[in-house]
Length: 109
Length: 111
Image (cartoon, rainbow over all chains, first blue to last red; front, side, top):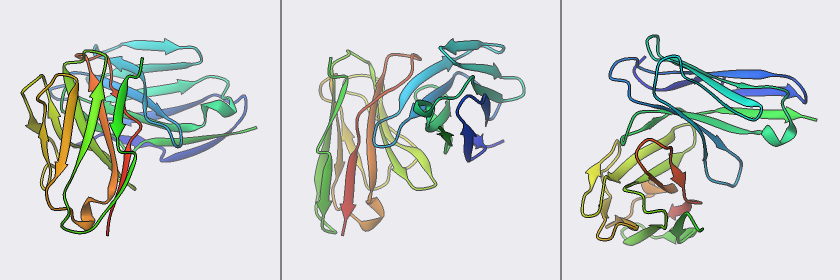
């Protein structure tokens, strides 16, 4: 992995479903992994910053895990709601942070 | 608490014109960044600053200059705008690794 890659590119889920996305990144020279939520017509909003292998963070129904040795992070949303519809970005690094292209989530009522 | 404020929000330039985008933050953050966002490309770092008086190149610095004369302000300049610089520009600031706070963006069109 040379860059930050996110999958899937887009996702449609029914309200109440749980879902998860993947962020893959180069495992060498790791410093930090960020997750952002980006709603249409707004600016990205920080969800989590993780620095240690095995880190787990939680904010309400959203949680994230980090594996720095294999170079991936998962973002989980439990019981998706329409207001969770957004693009979720991950980013790797410190100062010169590299962003992925995001996973666009649409939650269908 | 205003956070990060970008001005202007929209601008149309003719090829060859110059302009300056202003980013101001009121959180006393040391680090400030300028990104551009293009369809399918994600956010790409143009220039960044790790403190007052410092600047450094990011991933796509060509055609842009920056200055950080005051800690709270980070200016992005286009000396001679080109159509390839049509984009949405985001400024962000951070304190160490606590995540970025983004401005609301500037939509620039170069015709």
